[in-house]
Image 1: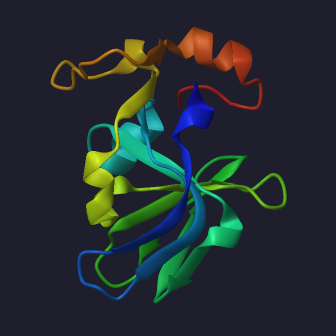
Image 2 (image 1 turned 30 degrees about the vertical axis):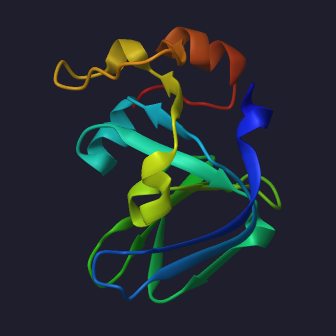
Length: 150
């Protein structure tokens, strides 16, 4: 199912202040996933959403800061305005970027295709639609590297 959303093309995005620009020229997923784990809630202020892009397709210019947020991933943000830019696996070479869709005007057309940690979602965030859903236990059973909902 996910493969049907993989596409090639160009997308342009930027942070709130415009100091960081992200260009995609190549393969990316034209669909969004959502996460309700505690760390994502703290980082996003609600629900974390992202779409993935192949690293060779992504070019970033501007002042980016990274924070190692867990044993397996870092999160990046603009060092000028603080806009959240991406989350990325740090355990291996060539990991995809999990980019914030709000940075890219064209991403507003992307469908929601997955939602994880659904049992941790705040009452004020109820995502509608027919998409894959997984509770904490279901997601962590398939992703043993995850250290839990800290």
